[in-house]
Length: 196
Image 1 (tube, one colour):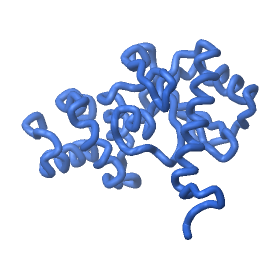
Image 2: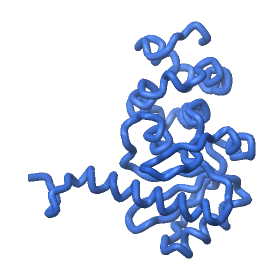
Image 3: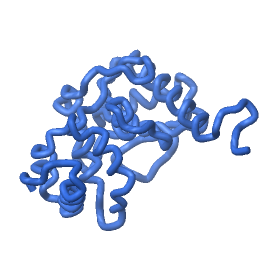
Image 4: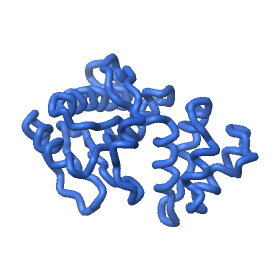
């Protein structure tokens, strides 16, 4: 019960399919020479958090988005129209790949990409956002209408030793939602809160 006909749990099959799409897309981006970095849930996974089962996120400069999207389409993926003005989307089969160029209204630049670290993700080496940058990006995405902290708590527990928390607090100081999240982490004992 609850298994596919080949004996793999549906969630496991979805995770494996996402990993395959991640590796395919990273290989295409690498071949194009477009600077990029893995972001989002899979960047957290590469750094020790639970595996993402939602989508694949890459960050890249806005000037490189068309080149990247065209290369992915040429590799057999299909573009997806989206109303957001900070990312582009492609699908690899049923798997969504986001090409993010202005997360939380901050454009991706050479400095952000230059801080990315080469890591092995499912046996493929690729640039992965630093933990600090990933946490800043996520905290600045919290808003009045998107303020569910539960999904990111486990990520911060897993990555807490890799994050410069005072830097995160300084870079997200404008956001009351980020402050509330950091205060929650401090009250839970995940981080020291003396910088808040």
